[in-house]
Length: 297
Image (cartoon, rainbow, N blue to C red):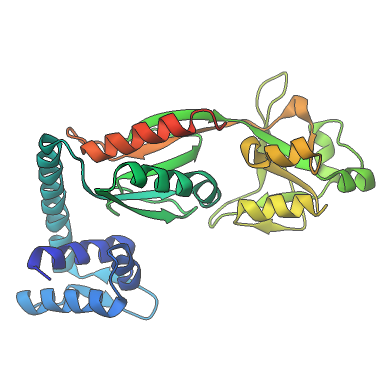
């Protein structure tokens, strides 16, 4: 492996905070990725990473190398993309991230269709509900579902995503139908919980505008698909994207709760690093995604 490729490994390892994760992004075993780091340390005669059983972080000189190597690699990637655009055939690797449920249901099939049409492009898809720093982690496209805050990143909206409160007919038969948002206090709300979430609340629509409702329940989970499964099993009321439960609603396996007070919807789109020059394959993939997913919601 060349010196440049060793730098790529080092940058990915630092960005991901893990030798195994960084190597996996580049299709390397942990041992191979570790050897690339050792080669760089031997070349420079310094330690580049501080390693413990739980944490990996660059040393002071490693942080300097990381910042400079990241800029060099980004410049080289843009140069290669420019040359490929003149050749008329976008090619190379695209690194894409997406939320877990949306990624499984929509983005993974889209990737297969896109690569069938563009065999010169390879896609590394990573599904995660954690917050991803797409600049530091070298991500080309990040699909996003939520309310976008001010961002220095480039944003392309795909669609508005409505949300719905749902429960099974069996749950409603046993516990009754809430007549107002305040009635949710008497129901078991199925809760989506992520690390560092300070509280559980749902933003519901009312005639007076959005209302923040504090909710509670016996169960919480960090996977939206599990929430849907629990709702189908009669465990309580869930707050889900409408597109994810549309088939269950149409089949009668779930019923909508408080339709006049539906949760505030989310925006669905994709984020890319803000650059004066955008890689042609990034534009190609985003255009494909927008066209393919426009009618889903």
